[in-house]
Length: 268
Image (cartoon, rainbow, N blue to C red; front, side, top):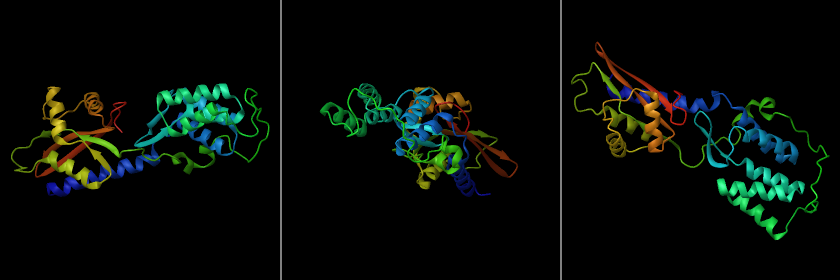
């Protein structure tokens, strides 16, 4: 197969994998708790929402404008802020102020500041008496205990990529058994260009990549170790790195590659 076509097929395969990974990746419990808490708020079940947010915080204790949920899925994650809003609606102003301040310290947001400003101005819900927390007794609308179990589609609710597209770095591929077969073709350039042309990823520029590799004294000969690749990717500030090898087998070339999560060094 011509090298150009092989490279295009390889990039397409990676794109398909990352896209479907959003659907088939295991959904962590903290994410289910967080999304279920948000849904409970829509039904005005403030105490239930607080309970779910507290469970989510056991796994991820800080609010963040961009947090990896699973696979290539990122979400806005503000359990402290949402708990503050729940307490606000329950009339527990002291805890509301506490949680909103924590949220603003960890990841400032307009929503948290708006509610904190209302508290500071003495603006409270009509049914709330400051200093006298309401006891949630009304059941209101029916609300399933686990929305994720009730509706599988809900697992992806709110799980859109936040901010920039998934950022990747294509690290140098190891060459096995190759001589002058590639001629003037630069495989790394073609792979990088392929990812850019998909218009799905934010791809690190090769010049910056080479500079970082040079500083790390790693060269451009190919990086195999997953933990090393993840460390480099984290230093660059990307979400994932692509590593692999190009091997000559008789009259054919094969491209093997791995997508590595820079946070966990896991091959995804």
